[in-house]
Image 1 (cartoon, rainbow, N blue to C red):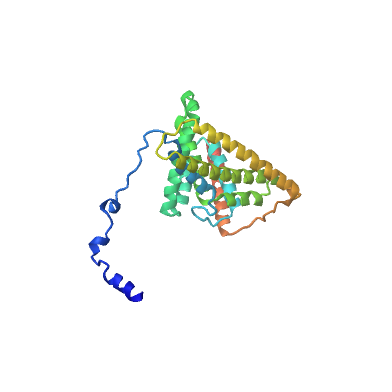
Image 2 (image 1 turned 90 degrees about the horizontal axis):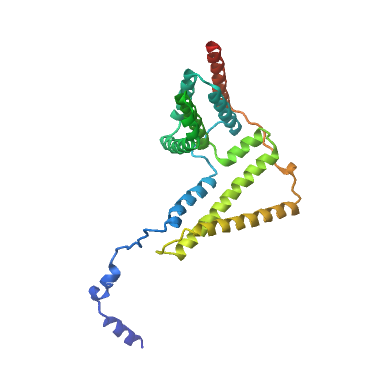
Length: 282
C-alpha cells in the first residue's frame, strides 16, 4: 500500500504550469458597485466614526502641563475680557498672547487647531449672519472679537480632553448635580453614537449596491429615541437599586504647579492691560 502511494506521488505531474490558477481567478481587478443615489448611509458612516472617536478620546491632542481648573479659569477670563473690550489695541495684545500659545505647540496640533477654528468660524457666521446684516457699524470689531473667542476655544479644546474638563469642574467645586449631568450626557452621546454607527453599518450591509430611501432617516431617529429611552430608564433603576445620592461624587483637590503660575500670570497681565487701556480711553 505504501509503495503504491509512493508510485502515485512520483507519477503526479510536476509541471508548474498545470498548478496555476485560471486567468479569471488571478485577475486582481476590484470592481466597485456604482452608488450614484442614496448615499445617505455611506456618507454618514465616516462622520459618526469621527464623532465616536472624538468622544472616546481620553488624552487630548497635546498634553498641557498646567492644571485643568486653571485652563478653565483662563478660558473664561480671556473670553470675558475680549467680549467687554472695544479697543483694537487690546484685541491685538490678545491675539499676540494666543499666538505665543500656538508657538509652543507642535505643528500637527496647530493644524488641528486651524481646522477647528475654521469650523467654529463657519458655524458662528451662519448663526450670527442676521445680526451682521442688521448691524451697520463696528462690523470689523465684532468679527475680530468672534475670531479671537473661537481661537481661544480651539486652543482649549486641543489641550483639554473631556475627562480633564470634568476634573477641572470638580476642582472648582461646582455643584455635583451639574457635573454629573454633563458627564452622563456626554457618555450617552457616545453610547448613542456607537449605536447609530452600528445601525448604519447594518443598513449598509443589507442594502449593498441598492438605492437607500431617504425615509430610512426617520427609522434611524425612531430607533435612536427608543434606545435612548430604554437606556435612560435602565440607568435610573440601577441608580435607585444602588442607593445613589449626590454626596457619592468624589471631589478633587486643587493642584498647583509652576505652569499654573504662568497661566495665572498671563490672565493677570490681560486684566491689568484691559484696565489700563480702558482708563486711558476714559
